Length: 199
Image 1 (tube, rainbow, N blue to C red):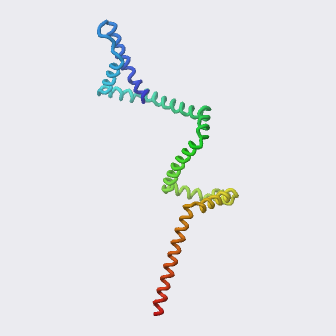
Image 2: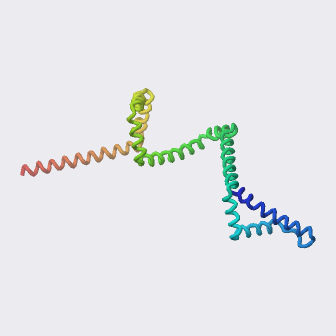
């Protein structure tokens, strides 16, 4: 955007500069400095005529083509920069820093979780996933994966970690206490009923 502004300002700046140098050549008024020229150009652009002139320039087909070409050049430059050997080396070095990699992974995980939740709430996406899982090849691959030694080991590790987790233990203790209280209350209710029948 800054480049476009400079491009638009250039003709006006050249015009004013030539006027200023013409006045100086005549021996009259002295040279207009940069700040005065800039202020004059800005004032001109703020007027209705100035705005109209900019609109006309921006609506010109050749100018539009030029802007589109500039955008393509910028995009290509960014792409080349990111895929260059230096850039690859930089990213390798950056991601070898455990703290940086962990931070990126954490941010990406939260974003991916949010994306997945949004997708799961989308009926169209859910329908598509159901259709995918109905495919015989997909079902076979999933069955093979679930039967694999690697998956069983992974599942065993997950279960072990979950059981050893303090949060899981606290939850289990809470559920067991709740179940015991419910069992006691039911037993107490039966005794009351039995006692009432005997009287």
